[in-house]
Length: 201
Image 1 (cartoon, rainbow, N blue to C red):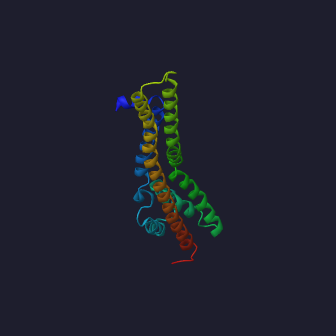
Image 2: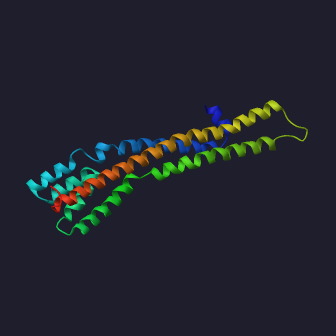
Image 3: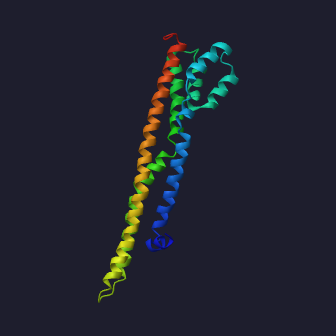
């Protein structure tokens, strides 16, 4: 493996760094975007029950906001439930945008790696090919050496694709997961608005 990296030349090092970064992001997002952590089961019902029994005291709201992203959104609505429906929804939307930003963290970087990795691989291949043909003498060269050099240069493209394909799959998967989580949080927030304003029982 080390010999292969050495043979591929310096262009492979940015790809190795990109692969390490992509793997770190994939594992971090897998841990962070667990559904039970983002949207705890029956959180809305438990929150309404606590509000009926204890009221909206600051300690309860703080614990709720720190517990999960959905709790953070619900607290924004509860703190503004004495105002009109429009103001309450506006507060929920503002907090929802901040939560959406947090859930999408690092995904842009992952998408960039997926897009750039094949180009980095192609760059390494082009540089390798230039060096191979530049080393040829006017009288020609050894065909076996030339073929070996070309195969080594193509390792950069292959490694670029190896990095890009899983990164793109993970990027699309997590973007879809974040969108689904945000839609569910939006529905629960709307339910909270309707319940607190007496539009639903």
